Amino acid sequence: MAKERSHSVREEARSRFIKDYVHRAFGLREDAKRQSEEKRYAEAVSTVQQALELLVKALFHEASVAPPRSHRIRDPRFGDRLVSLSDALKAALSPAKWQRLNLPRLFFIASFWGEFYLDAKYGSELLGAGPSQLLGPEEARLALAHFDEVVETLNDVFIR
View (cartoon, one colour):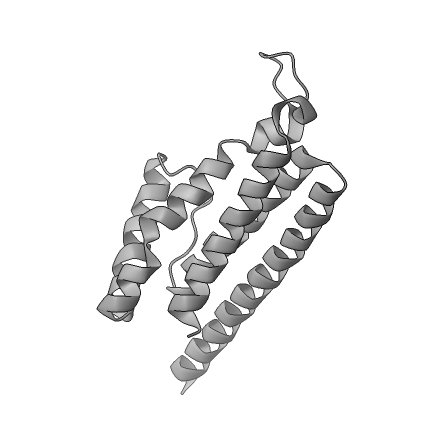
């Protein structure tokens, strides 16, 4: 009985994490859209990158795999968790949904924008350029489009 209650509490906490991460990600997406409209493109890119990280964390929680602290795919600790995530999702999803999920694409997108995080936030001392000199409207549009692609994929696999 106590074991069932403990499992139920963990499931409720997992569900709250997922809902909170997704809610925050969508709020950040709206912030990024507004920043882009205000021609604050570097901020928009930085904000989308944070939103993508939250969606990735939600995906880990959906599979009951603890998200890694590192956001770098090449980090061995991240790789171990990614393998666990992949195994859990492949076992839980139908073959058709597993294929539509296209986990490599989702992580490529998250990793791609993660590479720009520091430059979008602080600029590049090496290049002698502030964030607004590095990122423009095209990057902001692409970041928003990538966020929408990830959401569409996750909706297709987990909601429909």
